[in-house]
Amino acid sequence: MSTDTDILRRRVIQAGVATGVMAAASRAFAAAAAKPLAPVLKTIPSTGEKIPAVGVGTNAYGTEDPAELKRVLTAMPGLGGAVIDTARGYGESEVVIGRLLAEIGNRDRFFLATKTPLAGSVAGGTAVLDESFRRLQVSKIDLLQIHNLNGVNDLYPHFREYKSAGKIRYMGITTSQDGQYDGLIDAVTKNKFDFLQVDYSIGNRSAADKVLPLAQEKGMGVLINVPFGGRGRTMFPRVAGKTVPEWVTQELDITSWAQFFLKYIISHTAVTATIPGTTTVAYLEDNQQGGHGRLPNAAQRKKMEEFWDALPG
Image 1: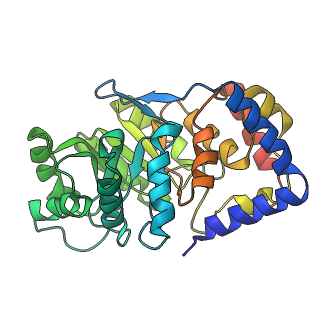
Image 2: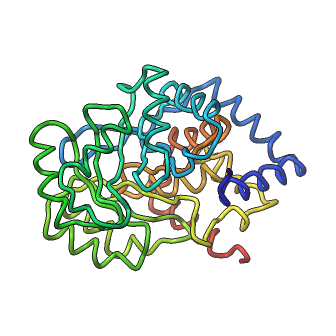
């Protein structure tokens, strides 16, 4: 089952074909292939470890074609990607990812992140955490996150225990709702996390007011969810039938709207990585290209914002 973002992104691409956009993009991709662009690696503040700035989100991995998902996870390391973000709340996503990585045999090439239950009681203690290890078929999780603040007080002591035991490498906490920002700020002020995850995009910049600066102040890594918008804010319709500005191709190696959106995000100095939903190899190739080459500086980011804000709709 395709998500609304997938459907709208596909329509934008189809509209681009009709206007010759894809032909221009193909020429740009060919040039990039002839001269490979350097991958964008960002540093995790608590350890200094570097990870690729564009990963994959897997909210739909429980419902999409498993054969295509296997092709995605097989190709991803070779294209420079490493971060996989999933969650107990994403249906069978953890199960599918665990099975596919076991079949492919490339678990060690990924930075694997997941989340505890999105809602309901988490009073089961370590059993709540253990379920993700079982579903993912792993003995170590790179980043375990408390999902949308659910059960912070109950889960945090178990997170510390598992990190001390070497079962998880990093501890995190997430939200994808602007209305939870105050709770997120409170949680990371009272507890020591390695990462926070938050919604942020060129169409939804409110996290830049308080959340991203706080993460920098506290030396936390930042994962960005819904980079193409979500919950009625999907951004592709606003650029349907339009080509990316020529200057971003010339100055920033951007050849698609997905790359425009992604490079804006990962150029923020607080951001460690972003996790666009990626269910096809075509989307994987496009998104990973957004994690290579030049990033916008402060003046270019401002120019991108002004361009976006001036678009109708």
